[in-house]
Length: 347
Ligand SMILES: NC(=O)c1ccc[n+]([C@@H]2O[C@H](COP(=O)([O-])OP(=O)(O)OC[C@H]3O[C@@H](n4cnc5c(N)ncnc54)[C@H](O)[C@@H]3O)[C@@H](O)[C@H]2O)c1
Ligand SMILES: O=C(O)C(=O)C[C@@H](O)[C@H](O)[C@H](O)COP(=O)(O)O
Ligand SMILES: [Zn+2]
Image 1 (cartoon, helix red, strand yellow):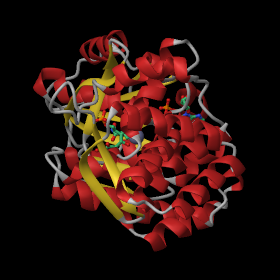
Image 2 (cartoon, protein in one colour):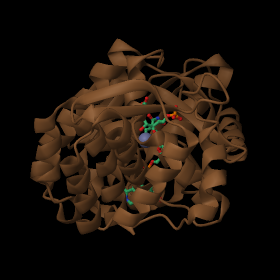
Image 3 (cartoon, rainbow, N blue to C red):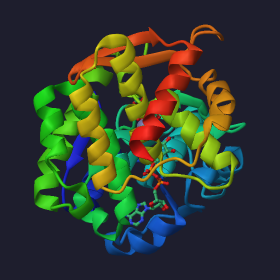
Image 4 (cartoon, helix red, strand yellow):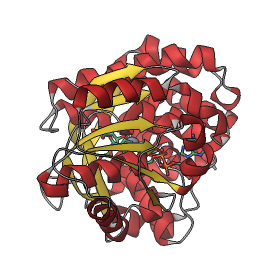
């Protein structure tokens, strides 16, 4: 079980965790934005390894620079790495720590809503490779996760929206009541006091599923709702040089997969329209795609990690909010039809 601390005093939480861990040295991994906007207030005096911000930097060459930084800083097997940042930092710093000298301890301090509610928790670490999302990685849970909404004050609005998409996903997996509670919250003008209990509830949904199936042999595939198509949107945008936030791609992917769920699993159309309205009213935008992009999107989906054969694309679908269905397949024509309907509804 992973230790998750909710606090408004990150520095004290870290001091006490480090005290208990008694490491030979401590090394911070962060990105340039977080170094400038978050680190000064934390007053930590450990050496810092700084990466370029964004998913484009979640790659082998940045990973290699983190390993080099650890060597240069004298890290040993008894060292502790603290990843302070969004999901890119926690995924890549976690993978660097999990592989350095075959594994050193690490703490995640998520600074985006997305990493607090999802990426920092549950042990998926990794990097993108050959244009494919998280193609190389390991299951390696952080020794502790320190969650604080205090870092969100400097977050751009689009990053709040991006993280909220993963919360909507957790709501959809949890229950109709939890999901509707999220649809009643205005993330575009977020009241932080109201957000905190929603965030904690959302993390508990992820923890429950991960504890049941830490290595994604079965039910954890539910947490991949929206990602079969979402990762394809995200990779396509990245290969065109116009990256989109992960959560936007997931929000669009969930909508397209809701359409497939409606076609093949009787997911209620009223819920589909309500979800589409939430995305439109709160400014999630839409992917820049036409039907000419479908072959490339399908090719990207064929690399999804849930697939067990090259021909069958594995989806997590829904029969209704709170009722996920794992290991479902959709035909190429159903996927194309769903993309058409998605574009009609969102664009
Ligand atoms: N491991 C998992 O289970 C998991 C789950 C969800 C997403 N992910 C991964 O997480 C990544 C997305 O994470 P993300 O959305 O946090 O993106 P990110 O890490 O790129 O952060 C988004 C942007 O916000 C900046 N930033 C971070 N904290 C800030 C702060 N407090 N104030 C101002 N700016 C700040 C970053 O520098 C970056 O420019 C993707 O790579 C995705 O694949 C992993
Ligand atoms: O924790 C999980 O399991 C998830 O699937 C959470 C997702 O939100 C996250 O984006 C994850 O990194 C996707 O995993 P992948 O195995 O499809 O790369
Ligand atoms: Zn995700």
